[in-house]
Each structure stands twice: as structure tokens, then as C-alpha cells.
Image (cartoon, rainbow, N blue to C red; front, side, top):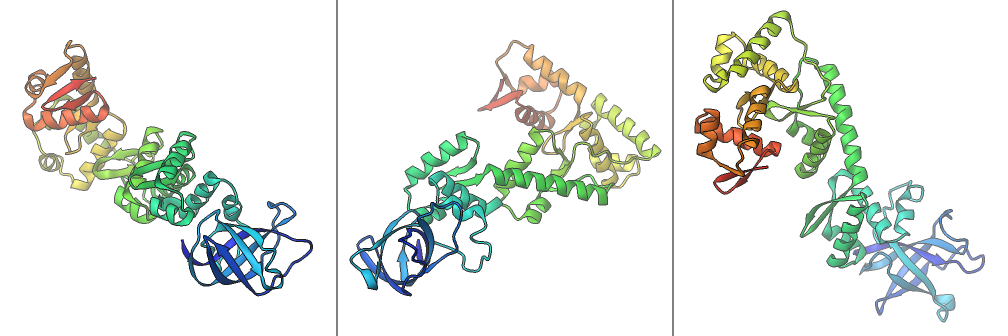
Length: 360
């Protein structure tokens, strides 16, 4: 890392607390003038070790755990030996020594990586940032990341180049999202939920990381997805008046009879004299209660009918099914058969295999 400042661990000699202001650093067969200042003692170093802040007279390429020699003009024949633990210290951070960050950097490679990940938080950490800081090779980093992922410490988001986030940050973001959804629902009890894009802007995280956290929360039944990428807590019950409950029952019956395959949402809106918002609210209520399912393109199907289709597929004795066979089995046109197959793919009932669907 090209830097003009660094923090190192140096072995203390006797009771000496102050070094000359001007010193010389020797590393990688180079000599650089610098200034040295002892930092206050910390309890995680051995009694004969001290932290020292180095201010270089010119930029130099220094890495984590690099060994250096420090020459003092008063005794250049006996250089002090030091180990760089932070080639990019923050001089404006008043709690620099109190935070566990520096202590982690003094540990092994795994500790160093966790420290950098903690510093980056929910933004994740890129391979270039790690290489610039540590000087480790891409192969070494990949092996380290895979070992840490196996232990549940990190999540690998990309391999070439490497892109990581700590499990600690993922858990933190998940807790923050749940707290935000709870506050939002308390303020907006009539709302169907929060849009995914709004969550991304609210927490300022890459879409990949947000999707990973939301998928984990959904898998653990901590959130549910409603239509149009709306997210809410599973226990949220949308308040309905008597008239809405009556319409809700009729909508469910229509879906059970398969009438949604023949009418558009616009026709439903006009039939029940509802605003589009009110209709979406009622349909979302049925989706949340798992009375109906919704495909990606807005196709609704009753849960009982869906269970019948799944049972027919699995009892057909076939390992694969064509679109034509599926249309005949369900009585659906291609317009509705395709989105239903895609829903079954998403549910893990079928898997696309060219023009066929493999029955799992």
C-alpha cells in the first residue's frame, strides 16, 4: 500500500520512552527518512513491546506484517526491529487505540481480514483492497476466504475478483432491516410493506448484499414478499373492514374456480369498484395468508389448485414434461402455463432443461 503513515509493533529496549524525532526505516532494501512517536501502552502486547506511529518523509509501498529495521542516529549500529500492523492508520480517529481493530491487525491473517471486513461493514470488501493492504497473493486470499466461509465467518460474494462480507455484517444488516420494517408498519398499518429498492437506498448497500440478506430472512420466515417486490414482517395483518372482507372472500373463491385466468386486474378493479391500490391490498392479503400464490408476472393461482397440479406432476410417472403436456394437464393456455411453470421452478418442483421441465 502506498502510504506515508504506518503503525508498527516494536520491541521496547529498557525504560526508553522517547526516540529521536528523525529516524531511518530500512525495508525491502530501501532506506526512508521518517519520524517516530510511541503510542500509549495497550494491554494486548507483551511487556517488552510497544506501538509506534511512523510518519514517512515520502510515500512508500508498505504492507501488513512487513518486517522493518529502525535506525536511530544515536545508535545506528543496533537497529530496532519492528513489524507493520497497519499501513493505513486513521490519524483523526480518537478511539483508534480503544477499538479492537488494531488488536485484530496484530493477530493472524484471519484476524486481519476480519478487521478489514468489520471496517467496511455492509459494503463488503474487494480483493484489490485486501491485496493493497496485506500484500497477500490472490491464491492465498482465496484459500483463506474459503476456509473462513467454511467456518461461518464470511460469505464469498464473488470469486474473480474476490468479493467478501463478514457474517457479522450480514447478521447486523438483517437485524436493522427487521427493526426498520417494524417501525414502518407501526407508522403505516395500512401499508402492504416496503419496496426492496427503498430498502437498498435506506441502508446504502449493494443490491447483491441486500438480496442475500433478504433471502436469508425469508428462508427463516422472518419476512415475507408481497407483490411488486414489497417486503413486510410475516405477522403483519392488514386491517380490513367488513366490506373488504366480503370482497376478499369472493376474490378467493374466484381464484379457486380459476376465474383469474380469464379476467384482468383492471376488470376486477371495475367489477368490485376498487382502486388499484385497494385491489392490490386484498390480493396481497391472500398471498400473505398463503391462500393464493403469485407468479413473477402477476399470475395468481389458488393454493389448493397449485397443490393438485404438483400432485399430478409427481404422480404422473414421468421424469420430464413438455409445455404441451403441461398445458393439457392443467387446461391452461401457453400465456398462463409458462408463468406457472416458472413459479414451479422457483418452488423447486420442476427444473428447466432446454425446452423441457425436469420433475424433481
